[in-house]
Length: 350
Image (cartoon, rainbow, N blue to C red; front, side, top):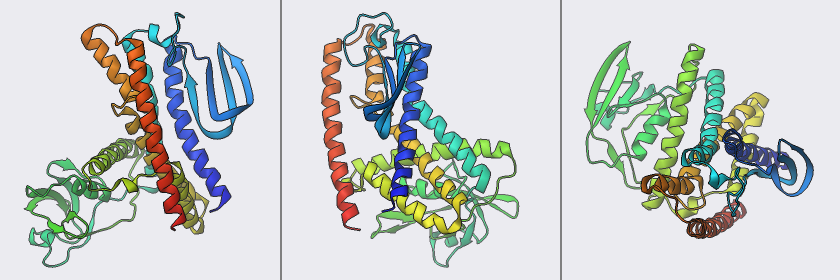
């Protein structure tokens, strides 16, 4: 594995984590919460300076970062402590981290789409005897909707089938020679892959966007796609359609980045950048979604306690909430240990 590629992977992941922490930091400052330290990386300090009551530091291990807020994880009577602020202020601070991940993903999506375009779902082939052919779809048709869901790219079709249970027929909207059409069909089932399919091939090359406004609009769709993809993947994991051994962590990310960079090198530095931007987009959305899960120790778990406080009119005792988050942290550490082990096993077995 190329050492430069490893450094690129660490840099990508670290920038996304720092972006997440920057969201917490900016909203904490705006709401008057003290931030004793904002650090990039972990371990011994390499560089540091103090400004506005916050110590900014660069640490030895350049992996991630942290926004350390006054009273966030320990008792504090200071007026600028996190627990002293209103529920809405605390909620905004916690939600800012995932929001900044989604914002970062949106910027990356606009850059990628504005530069290389989007994979529009034009049918390149419709084999005879397949459900799509029987429904009257033809080569060259552009798929626009499936059961009322807007289809912008060929990946939207794949995502649709990730969530499709096979119970109902599918209504497909399409465009042919500039005219809109609609048809209904029932997909076939692939037992080996445990998935449904319509029996078509789709053009997968990117077509340029017409103007900047289109790229801005498609950027929202791209982020929405990856959010839905992440949720669908979690659903498949919990229902057993995807084994837990498919979970991947930092080591797996490094491996994927290494593969992408190596495969993109022959096309030049520009395509290395575009492919890294695509991976960063996915990782940023994934980080945002995972942090919003209502699980103790995560932003979503802390937000859940604040919502509970708003409903009942008073906060949960800090010692009880602390115990819940501690248990959650232990479980997360156990999960990360399993994922790390799984990544190493996969890496060795390559």
